[in-house]
Amino acid sequence: MTEDIAKSSRAWLLNFGGGLKAAVGLHEMSQVLISPTLFDVPTMPRYCSDVVIFQKRILPVLNVPNMLLEGKKVIIVNTKVIGVAIYQDETTESANYGSLFLASMPESIIVSDEDVCDLPEEQKYWEPFAFTCFSYHDITVPIIDLAYLFSEEFSAVKQGIQ
Image 1: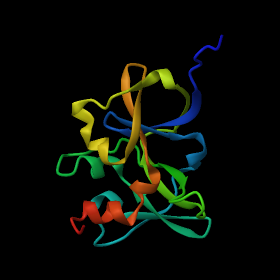
Image 2 (image 1 turned 90 degrees about the horizontal axis):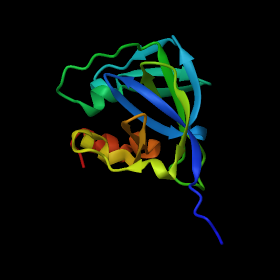
Image 3 (image 1 turned 90 degrees about the vertical axis):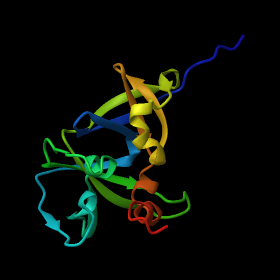
Image 4 (image 1 turned 135 degrees about the vertical axis):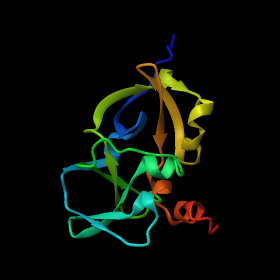
């Protein structure tokens, strides 16, 4: 007799501040930078107006609350923590890097298939780049698609170019 065994995976729980949390796979958070030097890029949208130099690469630093809650007052609790994400557009392509402002250090967690849940109506702003969601300590946490989040396609949608 075979039993259904729920699959579990390790992930990083990311805290963006203001109650916004999301997760990425364990292999998708490359490093965390504390108090790096940031460079402002004029004329860029508010949610991606900073860059950081990481391993001789210029990486955009996404401000997720500003991106998700455009037009609302957003306060970043701590901009001294930058998560460096690694992602691939396609499995046959080389890895790309991007970075995210975080309110605190990422937390290593274990997510089980049993924790899958629907995205609540009040969190629909995650929908364009959430693979799925899970429940963790009574909060709904989206698992974000980093490749889409850092894509030209997403940038075009945010800027209304399409």
